[in-house]
Image (tube, rainbow, N blue to C red; front, side, top):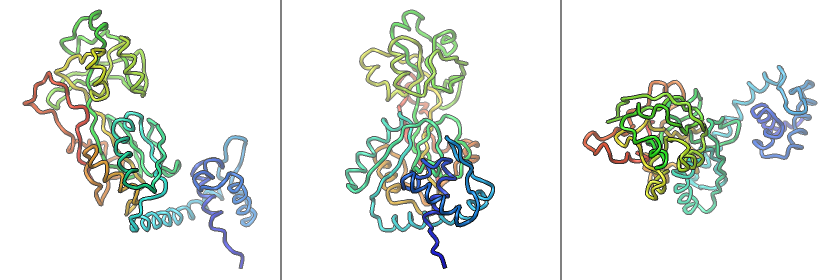
Length: 341
């Protein structure tokens, strides 16, 4: 009986998931030439084409799709068993692959990673900066941090909320001098605005309740907070930013917090993970470290599925503004929220 080359089948599944031989080979951790050879062997063995190829992309055939749907769950189960075995050994090693927005990585993740790597010298970390919610399986991530003020996309991945990032409104002294000091949100009508890529309206919050909304049409739109910060300090517009992120510019007098009696809706930072019964040791170690560095709760045994559950609003763990506090005081920059299972 001919020996079955199971690695060829794994490579086949990875190419289907990635949509290209190049990315499929990366996920299977083999050279592209090895991936092409593996698919050729399978096609010869099965007597049919598994992919239609062109110069830029491959498309799985109907036969290939049927085979993938039967085979892929078995490899997923094997990977889960392997991850559980590694976790049980409590050996934190290998490479932890993470996707994160820039602001989350620089403000919240970097201190945790420094502590994690000092505790586990055999661990390596690869970080990709992205503002999109990635497909963890397709791109091979162990964890992805997502920052949103609405809801998560529907997903089969497990999710935990780890941080709330408060936001407020800032402008350069030169812009305030030219426009006048605003006394209410409506006074910002007609001001030039520096916004996030998806900003269409700004919410104004007092004592945890939304009290006003301002439609905005930013003259600069970007997910990159560094660019928004630079544009604001140059007097190009009023910006909505994290107080922690702009602390240095405020202390140096480059920016002024406008409408200090108001905050804005906070950004929720979630961590997404492939749904597994038992977390890999490196993932659990990072979440444990984050408990100490950013105040997130320790990883729970159960995890919430990202998606429709989020549409109902995940607010029970959100920190509300203290009605006894001075309304003119700066809102705390990153209130910590318990992770809810």
